[in-house]
Length: 275
View 1 (cartoon, rainbow, N blue to C red):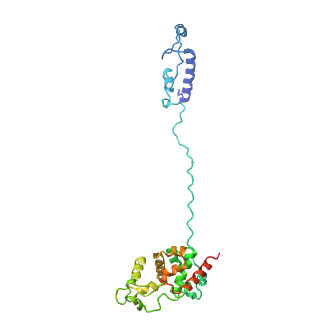
View 2 (cartoon, helix red, strand yellow):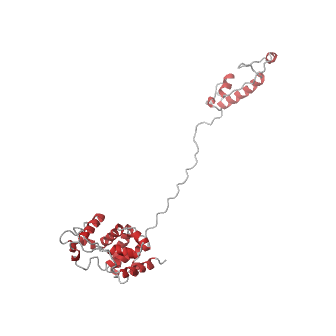
View 3 (cartoon, one colour):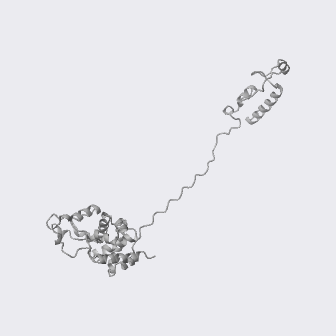
């Protein structure tokens, strides 16, 4: 008849209890049934201590149960371990807000008299250029638009009205070849001028304005190159800290139309700071 391990174990414990009662005390390592002789010999024996379950089974001549020598008879059997659910991942931080965009209505109020068709065509490349150049607060935007408005005659033209002959031979502009003055006269929203600047802005945009100067007059190029000029001279920081007069000096090289630049800047601030 098959006897389960649990029944076998309970029988072992019962037998151990009975044996302990009968044996009582034992000598050094040997159990004795003759307690009279032990007492007569004056030997006080210590109770048998079983430090391992397997020792008890050996004394009682019971086979050990599986896992009995591992430290505990009721040790948990291997099995599935319940684990706590993984903590939920922290939500990703929200993306930073996009730079403030100038709307068509705002542009019309900042630059009075700007033709409606020009506003519709220019507001998108203007905002793209400001984003690319980090022109991302009302002070910077008002200063940027004020300078472009003066340089481009309220965005009516992206080519200098003068012929450019006055720039001929100007080594400070990089005009070292015959005809460079007229060829590289002011173009774009901020009037990029001189061979040296045309070369630099070509490297920045990847468009060869040296070979094809007239490409600077396309709206997307006109505003992108204005952002290049602005950032190459660190004009964001100048606008933030030094003010519109210093910005004007670094754009124009002097005080040409300074009163208008200041007025356009103040008008731009008034428009862009409205709630």
